[in-house]
Image (cartoon, rainbow, N blue to C red; front, side, top):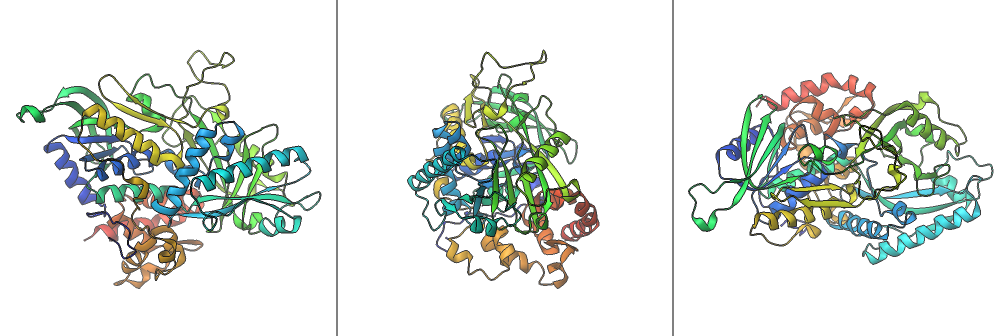
Length: 548
C-alpha cells in the first residue's frame, strides 16, 4: 500500500533500455506468455495493465515508442461525451461519463483536472440554439451525477452573465455578447503521460513492455504446449517480430494475442472495416487568447454536434481543435492540411475581439481516429480504391472487440476516455479465447503510478507543475538532481521542462532516444522551433542518463 492508503503496483515500475532488452530475451527464450498485446497506445497499455493485474503473464510489443501514434495527438480531454448526446448516442455518453469518473477519482487524479468550458452566446448563436445547448448540458450533468462524480470534482453547468463570460475568456468580442453557458469537464495534463503511467503500472504487475519491437506476422493457432502435461497443453500463436534496435528477426509465442494497434489494426486483422479520420489541432501562445482561464467551445457553422475547442494548457500554450476529415492513407505521423488550419483559425476568430493570425501559430499537430465502419448507408460515397468520402463526424465512437475463429482478439474504435472499458472487454475476450485462468477485472479502482487522493497530492513537497505530471513521484524526479542541482533548471529558455525530468524519463519511463524525450515524455516537440532549440540539450542529457 502507498502512504495514501491506495494499492501500489507489487513490483518494479521503472522502465529502461536494460530492462527492455532483458525482458525481450526472456520472452523469446521462455514459455509462451498468456497474452501478447500488439500496440503501445492508450488501449494497448490499458490491455496490458488489465491482463497483468488479473494475474496473467503479459508482453506488450510496440513498433515505435509508447504513445507514438494516435494517443499523443488527442485534445487531451477526459470528457463526458456531450457531443454524442447531440447525436443521440446516449450509450456512448453514459460510458464516457462513467469512465471519466474512474479516471478523475481513482485511476489518475494527478493527471486529470477539472476544466471550465464556455460556450459564448454571440449573435451567431440563436436563442433556440442556446436553449438546445443548455438542454444538452443539463442532460450531461444528469449523467455526471448518475456516474457518481461529486460536484466538488466537476461542478454542474450554469448560465453566465456577459461579465462572467469575459472573466473566463477575456479575448471574446464584447459586441452582441449575451453571456455564456459554462460546463466542467476533465482535462489531461498530457495524454502521452497517461500512456507512460499505464505502461509503468502494468510493468509493476509483471507485464513486459517491449518497445521498438514490430510485429510483422501472426501465425496461429499453433501448438505451443511442447512437452507439458496434457492438461497444460493448448493452442496458441507464434508471432514473427523484428527488433527495431538491432534489426534481428525474432519469434514469440503466446497463448492469446490482442491486436490493439488502432488505425493500423487491419494490417494484422484483415476484414476489420475502419473509416479513419484526421483531427487537427493548432498550438498558440496563451497571450493570443489574452490569458484565458477557461476553455471555449465555439459551434462550427452549419453543424449540430461539432464545436471548435480553445483549450488553455497551463504551460503558456493554447490548443485549438478539432477537425474531422476522412483519410484514405495511413501514415505514422499524419500532417495537418492547410485547409484544416484555415478552418480552425476562421471559426475561432469569428468570436474574438482580435482575430487570430497565422503568425500566432507556434505549431500544429494531427492524429488519426480509428472509427468503425459499422453503419453503412446508401448515400456513402466511396472511391474505386475503397477510400471513404462521407462524413466521419457522423460515425459512432463505440468500440468493437472481435475474436477471429483462430482466437486472435482485435479491439478498435472508441476514444481515449473509454480506454479502460475497451481494455477490460478485450481481456475478457482473450481469456475466453485462450481458456485462461484469471481473476475479474480490477482496474475500476486501480490507481496508476503516482496516483493518490487529491488531498494527498496537495501536500506533496514538490512544485505544482511536477505534481500535476508525476503525482506522488514528483519528489523522485527532484531527487535526480541531488548530485547535480543544475538539472533542476529548464533545459532551454522559454520551456519549463527541466533536465531532471528528462533524466528521469530515461532511467524510469522507458525513453530510448532523444526523440522520445522531446516528443512524448515531454511535449516540447509540439512547437518545432522549441524542439530545434532543445535538441542539443536533450541529446546531452540522454547521454548523461545512460552513462552509468
